[in-house]
Length: 364
Image (cartoon, rainbow, N blue to C red; front, side, top):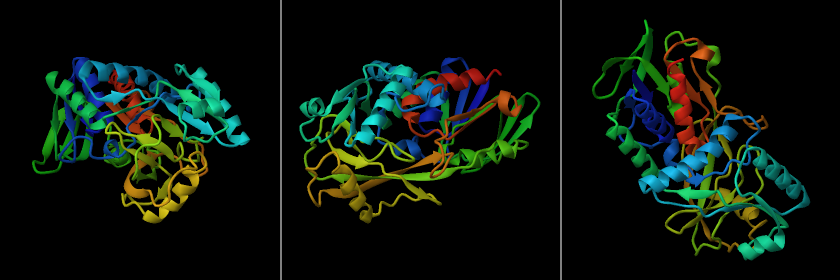
């Protein structure tokens, strides 16, 4: 089967690799000039453990499995990573109750090694920390996201797959047992394929609207949640990732480390109407206030705007967080087509598990 994957971010590459491993002839159409230039280049590069997500959700299913697959992949492919662990901290009694709920959910989700500890034990691990309780997650880590995507690309190409850059998809026309895909870009034209997988990230809904005959009612709304990051100017104060209890739309302004030893904070949640990646320096005030609830030693004037990313959410402020959406032929009744919507955090961690799942849809 010839499969076209739309989008060469981490999800598209993982799907393409899985399809090639299953014996399919795979082409990836990418509108940009390189892999991973969208959502995949603007995240915290955290390998999540999966304790937050509701029982039975796709996020819970794919994050827990994806975590194990991703560590195995990094080891076998030489992708730089660090299983540094993280602490989710409670600074009030209300947050302690929330922490206990997260612990219980993590156990249901099969997250390995979770442990509730007291404030003194947490400070024994991270002396700069102030909290009354913490949830320790040894399965959480960090990864070189770009190196990971390069490894996925390498596997894909070794299996005979290819990526066509500067190749935006302008229209998809269903044919008898096939799809005609019309391309723009430097070399416009069309290609007939057996199956199409839409992994276009922020553009997934726009691509779906270009599918002739696709039910418009099956295209979910998209809500843009911008996450801003601020860099810390001094030496890292922590050896683990430090997370507050979650907030509406995200996991809270947390301590993120990278493999180069730098420390930064973010993301916050900024609901926006249009895509833009400018970081407003004035947002630092809210960062100082939030961070000092668990790190009172944060010095003045130590944060500088760093970068931002945008999550393609399916629900907005005050609404329950939506799950990943995978729309295959069983849902929309169009053979050889799979649409992925709302693949945000923990998308990177879930990518290998998602890839395997999507390939199982192709023969439906």
